[in-house]
Length: 252
Image 1: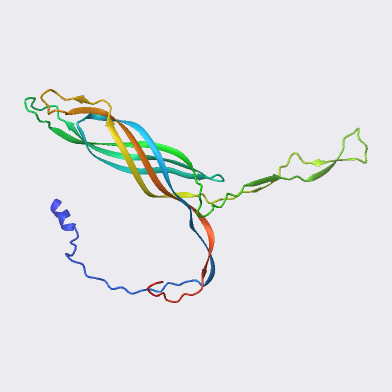
Image 2: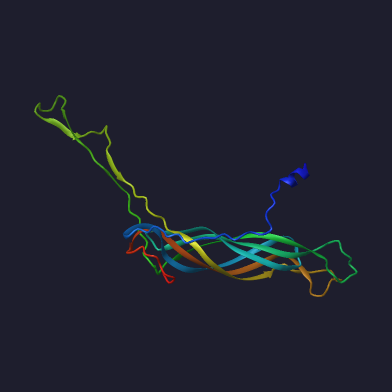
């Protein structure tokens, strides 16, 4: 059966031939055109300061490498204010050497295995956008109003016969409501820069036969300064002008 599956695999050519192409002239509308596109409201760099403690499942002899990645789960401009709410994580993959317990105590060497620990360090902050490249379109407020109709009815005994009961009908309800579906600003992550400082807080020396200065730990205190560059956008309707659809030259 395995041989049959091997025979079913496609045999790709060792080399590919080059394909020709030719330019295609696009169809361009002439005049003043209305379009709806993402508009950049602001670009800003937000600085977040973090101080956290990371615990390792096994003793750590030495940290070999740390890979970091920013993950944003919320970036919300709270209209009609200028406050930007940011929430996310710093994903850290820590590669470290962990000493092997079963080793010859007579030798002044340390055998270790390479392990990996992945943690998410959470952060959240609120910052104010002080400079806009373009003002956001503020949300339109929903409207709701009630109205009634006049009713006329005869009065019960005890009232003059020529008088009528004039009022609105309490058994009916009438309302006019308007709801607006506003465009919500959103964010794009441009870049990030992380400066970190890690320090073991429970380091203890190894056995007497171990090389001088060697020790293990299971906890580190980590301080980070995180700079996150963001782009805040909003879908807006704008007008563009097109005066010609002539072919562009090389500098078009």
